Length: 274
Image (tube, rainbow, N blue to C red; front, side, top):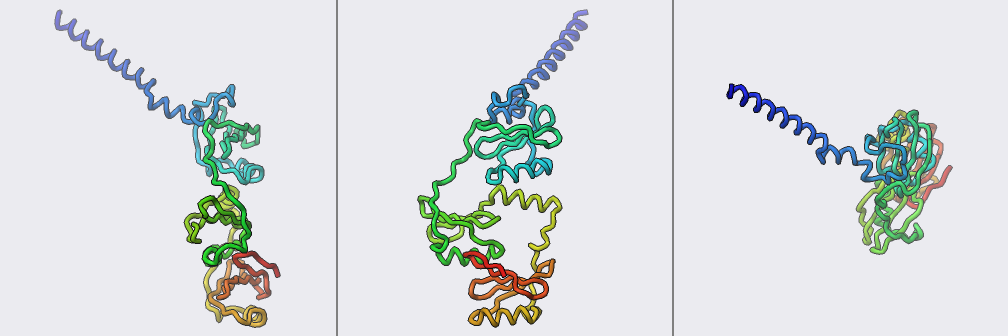
């Protein structure tokens, strides 16, 4: 009988231990931390009536197309810091500068909430705009060689003498005080446009294939010989749409239509349409 009582006591203790373990797991700080990710970032008082702890964080690329389109049209210069599916199935997007934009479960805009984040976005350096013509040749040469499809929109310097060069519909390039390239910083607007291209919109004109110089139409070579007598052709390429691109040794890039007619001239300083 005593052995039976001991056995029952051991079973009871085992049951209590298992129950206590499960109960503690529900209150495990690790689980609480996972549920509190959004609550630790946003100001919960700005979302009264919503259970922030139940939000699920998602990648920006997983947002519906109409949400991404709305952000591109209305918040072009603000980066997406976080995105969530909220407790009602809608979407909450936290942008740089503490602004949160809410959408319903169909991706339709609901509201924008200012000062919705607890933490301030990382401050940008204090920049002073400069004349693009004052940029060193090392900077303009780098842009011509590596970003020939873009033109310069504006340029600035910071307190350390670094240069920030914003390209039209493109990224911002950063150079040190000696003009050496250090970083490409993609703007949110440019990234969204690129992501939209990945979602199926045609970007065939951006695809270039190198060709022999002898393959250029006579109208192209004649135009260059007439208008750029002191320049030599370095290389040439053709796009999927049939347009031609020609690089000259004078840091000029020429664009021609499929029929060989002049389209535009591009340099690191800007562009001229034909």
